[in-house]
Each structure stands twice: as C-alpha cells, then as structure tokens.
Length: 172
Image (cartoon, rainbow, N blue to C red; front, side):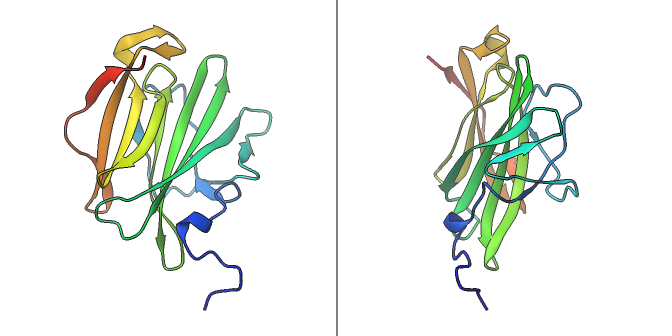
C-alpha cells in the first residue's frame, strides 16, 4: 500500500535529502574505483550537502536520468563533489533504479582528483553508462587536463562492467 504523497517513480525521489553509503578516502584518489555497494557506513545529505565536522563537505552536483540495458525502468545517476581543500577535489557517483516502490542502489564509484581521472561528464547512451574522466596522461597542471578518457559500463550479472575499449579525446 502506497502512502499519500509517496514517490511513484525514481524521478520523484528527493536525492538532496537522503542517505548514501560512503567511505572517506585515505589520501587523494587517482583513478575511478567502483565501491562496495553494501557498504555499512552511511551519510545523510541535508539540502544537498554533508559536512564532515570541520572538514570539507560533500556536495550534490547533479541528478541525471537514463536507461541501462538489463535494468527495467529509468536509472538515476547522482553525482557529488568532495572538495578536500587545496587542489584536491574528486567526485562520487551513485546509480539507483526504482524497485519495489523505492530507490535501490545499483552501484557507486569514486573518481580520481581533478586532472588525474576526475569526473568530466556522466551520461547514458545506447543502454550504457558513459563516464568521461580527465586524462591523467595529458595533465597541464594539478587542476587541468587537455584530454578525456571515455569509459562505457554495462549492467551485467548484477554489477557494472567496463564495456569495450576506452576512448580518448580533446577537452578543448
């Protein structure tokens, strides 16, 4: 039985005020890593932010919707930024589907920091999750890279798997 006013689809979820699994990195990450979807450490965003005491905060950037081959209905991709201070800034991505009248986490990942595999773009295309990362081989400064590395992921066997070869291109 649904409550009056209860969300009816993934698009109606308030991602700015909900709980997410989270593990704070030891050091600055330099690559994309898929994290344990069953992580027991949880944080709860309030108005799109989470503050770690006096530490920097985690900030919700965007929610993108799309289709993944092998998943019924739409998928929501929630991206967040962790500005660790100085030049270190990296992102987290959370992917949810609508299941049994509520959002269900498919998986989540951590990117590298800024020029070293930082998140440039995330979108859905032809049933795949596409993640464009800054190319660490084309670093111009700690903040910047002149290129990207595009990785495509498929939902296969209950997890995200890299599909095909990585593509490389210019950011400018």
